[in-house]
Length: 313
Image 1 (cartoon, rainbow, N blue to C red):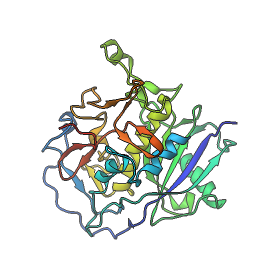
Image 2: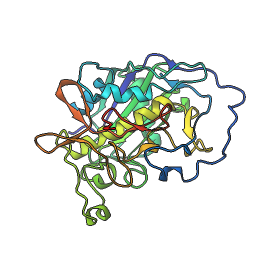
Image 3: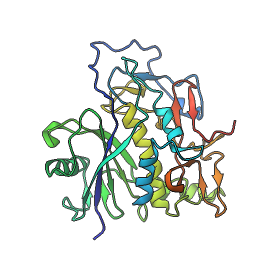
Image 4: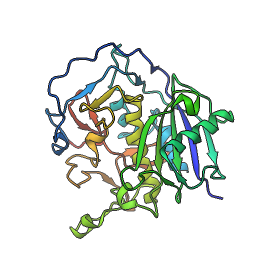
């Protein structure tokens, strides 16, 4: 039977569980407003630190193992992750560049069924922790729950392709930062595997989907969403650290600001300038074992713009 869900523990040493300050930093402009329309860069984007802690299938595993691997040639996954490492908390401690794949657990029997609620994602983690298949690491752990094709999750395809949050002690016994990402192949690739599949309105406009670097739009789409969620999980693990806007229940985070931007000139439905190999497959970062991936850019607190290691200017 195909796996229904897999839970992965990433060890990120130096998870900064510093105490929240009694009062937040003062803020200037009260609203983010429509700043997303200034895609790529903007002085109007006010990404603010809210005094909370910051987290210092083979293609999926290789991507995770590439986050701290210095050996791939540029532009590399590790160089992409370096943008996330620019973020720090109020102690000036940065997100770590060292990420290790510490443990994996699979739910091959689909113990909770194939239609999961958001709380069920926490229950998947709770079962893995209770059974000893995953350790509970509240200080340096970041957890990923990845669901297989054919598994539905609340709001999947309709409103989200992935999300991150933290577990409730009443369910899991610990407060653990986690993210969930689903496989959209055969379900909503045109929504969650962009730019390897396009919505009908884009196709009618003459745009063509890019060929996925690992030959599977569903898996390569998952890689991009995992990258998105992991960067935001690291910089806003308890939903009280780095985000733009005033509402922590609907934060605009460092990957949200660059959604759909994969290369120079990206935005407005154009992925940007990316590399194309001899087989016509598009990519923008090198990983371990010769793997190539296409991941979206991240907002840099230094450049005040979306940046990526494959920038051509």
